[in-house]
Length: 186
Image (cartoon, rainbow, N blue to C red; front, side, top):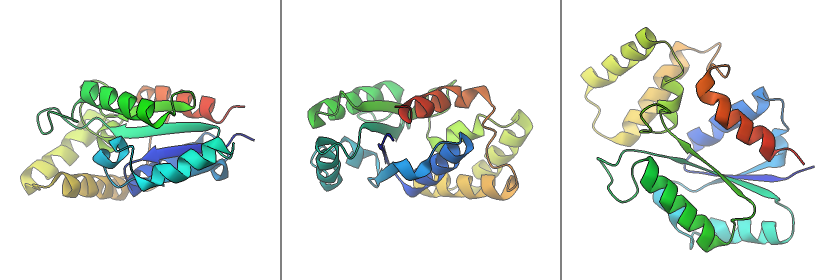
């Protein structure tokens, strides 16, 4: 059985991936999650969580690693924000860690604009009227903090769609489903 590590920024990412893995009928117990607590921590090859991951890879307890990170927006972070910057920084970090042979990556964002985060990907899979309703609420609420915005967006989505929280049949999930299916394949 393949043992997989999923490196992500936060607990909402972990919850989402657990839901998707179960939806794909893959064995979620074969995944070890490394929640690094933010984008800059994922890029920090000195992060103490990587010491454990490196050991588990070297002892063949982990065979594959998926790095999942938000694209964010270059307008708010010229160094790490934006799809291209995120991709370059993530590739550099993976190479510095020496994980190139076992690593896969997925950058979360709205697949059309290439901006955003997990919640942007999720919003991109609902109908325009539903998306406009949620975005209008967020805009008139004037939430300043990105973290508050993401948490509130996540909560609104879960409250609005409790019975079918994600439309995994949407084409915006196709690439991610393929990556995960391949990751768990021996």
